[in-house]
Length: 218
Image (cartoon, rainbow, N blue to C red):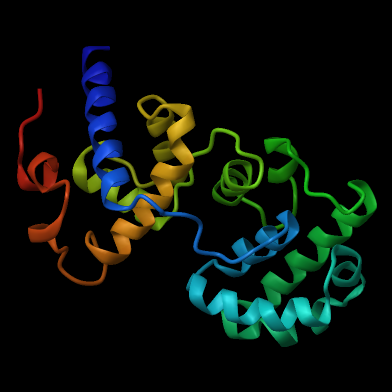
């Protein structure tokens, strides 16, 4: 319990510093309706958000609402989303998901986490993103940046399993901070605490409290 209390206090300091560093951090997928975020987050698997934002423009131009996209065949969807990679499986999931929204939810995205999780192609990361960004509910999105950075700095230890990381963070991150915290980790992961190059520790706002630098915290 003492260790968890220490981590909670430390997490608040990490949150404070990231807020100062990235005050305007938000979801980097473009959307103006909940169902569009549902589509984009499925396309974003193993693809950059920047590319997804370009591809969906053509998709929404041809299929401007849930009904239109639900009426499209997976093959028609795949033809457009192929540049995002894994086009066959992504198109299949998007098609099935839109049909469920049309047939079971009157074209609306459900606000219940378990109902979101039951949709084709929707995992915990996607469901949490929608819960936090669309519905303003507590959420922790354990994407690759969140998993990497929280392990590096020592907020999470010994696991890179997305669900285990999420559960560990729920214990120490205030619920109302979770969504923004994860968005800021994305910015930090892209700009400073990178994966494919040596992290830019010299300009990291967390360098003096990062476990990677063998700093002892009390």
